[in-house]
Image (cartoon, rainbow over the protein chains, first blue to last red):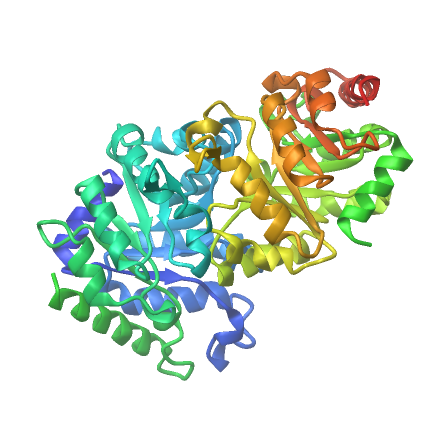
Length: 270
Length: 270
């Protein structure tokens, strides 16, 4: 089934808008992984298995695998999530963007090699650079709009005819790029006002919202400003605050508890 | 030595502004590679060895390796170029861009894992997303400004206070991001007028210029509009027109001849 439909179904079935970001940092792993040559896979698998019931999506971040030459671990992790937790979409966080012929290679990387259900993409190169992703109608394309980092405004807030660039991106995605209905947008939790503005522009296009947890975004403001009329519309992503909730023997249970706590906090405001 | 200094030295020693883009597409390889399990490495190595004397840089494009699970081939290819052709910098074309903590992982991927001398980066997330690359003062950071693809203008031409966004990016890089003197800019050959405008903004910051060859950029216009006062300043990149100049047994010689022809054409206008 298509990513957006799978996502809506999972929102309904799980009652959760939480996405766990799988950003492995071996230096932060519990001691038991110190001598495990497959630590990156094993750690992420344990977190995913423990937290699955509390999430609507998982989001592995590819740089955290690539920096360690752990592409094989990433591939097995996504396959494991699909096999062990059917119905939970996997968003590959790769923020790819290149000319069309190269974007086709990146689409093959994300969807064919890794089997991801959706991928994040950067809009700076324009529509034809995103087209090979958009053309995969069964897959999701999560386009950067207003990111969660401190320097997000350097370009994204520049005013184009009186409106910030990120709103122009939101307009383009909603009106020109979403012909297959498979787009979503990245809008950071650290900017609640911008979340509201983008929601007004794009209707019920799903938002991937990073920036709660370690980056300090306010859950109440996020949910109230950015939910859709049916109380969904959000993929609220937390990585470090869940993955590294404990570095003791209870790391998996602690991660699950952190995911559950975030789910419940979000649900108070839906 | 630092990337920009190495580049200037190589420009002087080789008399060439040509960069060969290493974008392997196994379907276009000569027949002899059909049963070679290491075809991606072997083909790129042959091209690099044949064309080396005519180039200032090599630029492997990572998606063309990642789509085939050929990270190991990419790693060995860069090591081979460094060993067999010392003094020729390698630019890893990856167009990465993410929040700071993730950008550190991407910097580790490009510089530590692959040993690249420079990497291409996307500016949409702002300065802090590029900072982990900028901080590697011995490495080059080649930032997307005005790309060569048809949709480049979708965002890059939007007017910010009367100036297109790509010129704002050029200003930011020249004035705020280039403290370590290790920046370069991507400006496509398909937009000669924009090349001239960006050159006026950034002084002698090197340009990586894709878009000659298969994409149709005009060499004379590129060189006349974008060279620096000393007749350098350009890394003119061609991929498909060189790599696939012949798919017969003479593929490597044909690639070398195409690189030499491009070098000579460029040099007529320097």
